[in-house]
Length: 316
Image 1: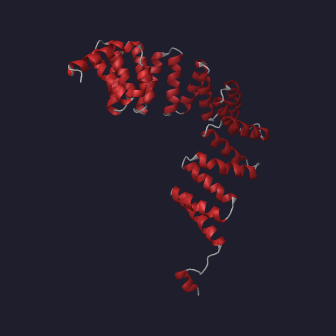
Image 2: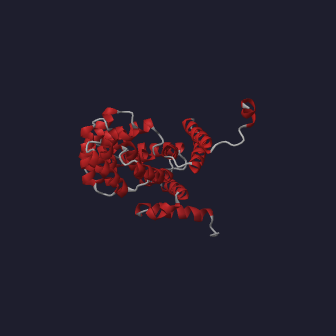
Image 3: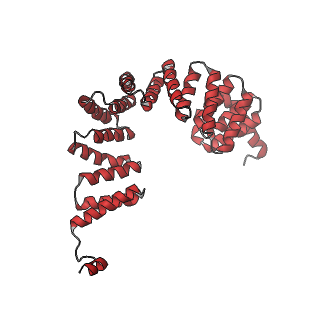
């Protein structure tokens, strides 16, 4: 009987056996990175039996797939069933933040902090929600508590710098970004935030060096390119700005903002024909930006229109 069963299978596999097989296959698939197959197995298992552990596995699969909207209802059900599970509730709060459901995220964190006021992760996630809601002062309070409890919580320090930036408190931003860069000089996000802070407190030469360091780490950082280019221009280094934008365009031919910025530099250098070509290319890549053009490009636009007329004198 055992031999034939191993070949043909039992006449009727129990529901319990099917559930276990589907769940275990789903977990193995998740561990191997086969996420769509893991989702299929775990969903099929849940159709056979309602099981919190399997729901947790499925939520984990969705989170790995960045499908936060699919994970959220599972986490809500699990947290309702296990209100005292701190890790589960923290994961729920984090997922709410991914979906920018700030009010609910704040409420979940408030409940966590009521139970444990020293839970640094709940303080951080609460501050994230408060930033999203525009409650900057409360966010600063929570983040300061968080970094006091855990000085190595670098994400909290970075978030505090971002909140302070939104408040225009650039000297305070600089203090946080200096600390972050000291902890990890090779972190692109820390270096970029520090460069922005330096530029806003008037330390332009240091800001230029910092933005250059960012681009050494990642030459494809578009925002750093534009910030550095503007600093070059404001410090009368138009040749460097021109070279920077040209190199960026060579790396990223679809970089509309770099074409526009290079066109502005060419216009300042009295190369209106070159500026017109760059402006034209910028608008081809990002036509929705046309309304943002200001008076500085009026002569460039006129030059561009004249070039078109020269190419097509009959107005076709």
